[in-house]
Length: 326
Image 1 (spheres, rainbow, N blue to C red):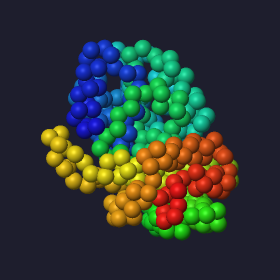
Image 2 (tube, rainbow, N blue to C red):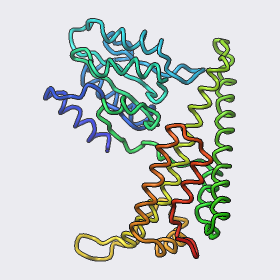
Image 3 (cartoon, rainbow, N blue to C red):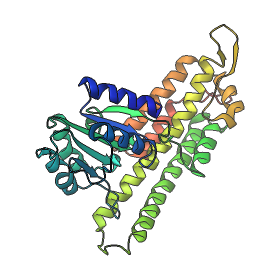
Image 4 (cartoon, rainbow, N blue to C red):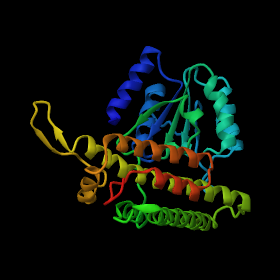
């Protein structure tokens, strides 16, 4: 949604007395989500410098750990929001990088979202909403902005995933097991990358307060970063099978007047030739089942089902359309 349109919707809701208690702004925290949040705050509190307004409470990840702890949530958000307003009007709570909420801090915040104090509004800003608890998301009105992060793996991992999916050797038990092993190797590399990135972050902050981060905290940070990479991995898988479904269902677009609207746009445009050849060899029903299989795979990952057997099961379920395949 364009930022002006999003602001108009919130403005209309506020002025009519029907504003949501909480808005989840999905986009750049220092980009459009941040800009929209500031515009909404000025709508509530008027012009001027709002950085030190007594009725606006802001919470963001701590630099070193890149998380929002339960202690910070209680001290800087929940308790201040429960107090009487200083100026007699609105109170606003702004959570920057809401996806950095730990489970404990998210659960502590949840009760406030469920039973918010009167005349309060929460703005949750996130570039990775998939990391938020579903219970948090369900209590917010979500607004996706144009600069919301496109979930795609960084290179060279994205190419490795797409190469495995585009392979002509995907028939038979052995070939499919090899494909699953290649994808499992990508996940293993991503876990190593997560550990390296966390270590880089900690080293960058080492010159600040000098406080050491415990082993358990480091493991939690690595796990969180890996889950982000894994979500991108799954999104890359999904992009391939969404392209297959789009080509199988409507290989060319048709305009409203019935004229040929050109080729169906693809998420993986450079691989159009392979995708078109594959789409011709599967049915529309198989294309839909592929999407369902990847969705089920992603849901199972979030339930901590072991990745390697899960990948093997996924590959066995998929209709690739490879030569001689399903």
